[in-house]
Image (cartoon, rainbow, N blue to C red; front, side):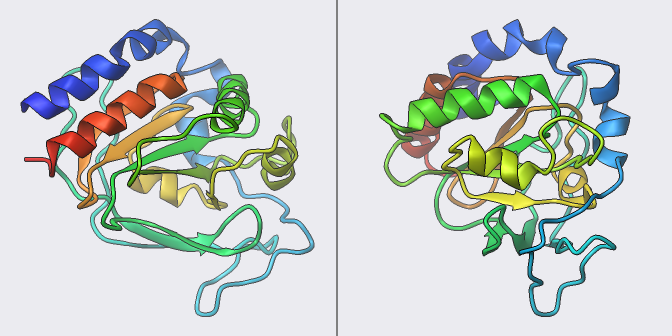
Length: 226
């Protein structure tokens, strides 16, 4: 383990450890249901991305290119560390074109489910924090909303996030394939990458905004992973 990754782990470990037992949230938020749930009805305003398919309900299905990350392990070494994240292209919750992938700056990527209470807390905490604070200069925070279920709370996720004042660009993942491509196992799920799109650390569970900001600062100061 290199020194930079060790420092990032120190930056987030206290919060991540404290919520580790809660990452499954409840029986309905287990890894299996999280990544294999059905797609759902899209808002009437949803429009398609040229060249990309839509699901039966009209949501754009994100295109994924590049190698998929392995599933996040329950224990032991995370073999995704040092891998480059895949690139995904689709639409954001506001209907705009959006892509997530290597883009010459460190990024924090958070995966959210609209029915997960920990995700709802994460959205509220980060919305409040970002109103007065920010991540280090030259870094960014992006989101993915996945495991969409019309029978559960806060559906549709587009309305939930926009109504909550969530200021983070967030891709819609109607088929859960983006979540699978990043190795998601629980919610919320975090992937932190360097300026080359190389994974520095992943984690499942709520992480305080200040801890993510500190981790991103550590990534900036440490250069590329390796």
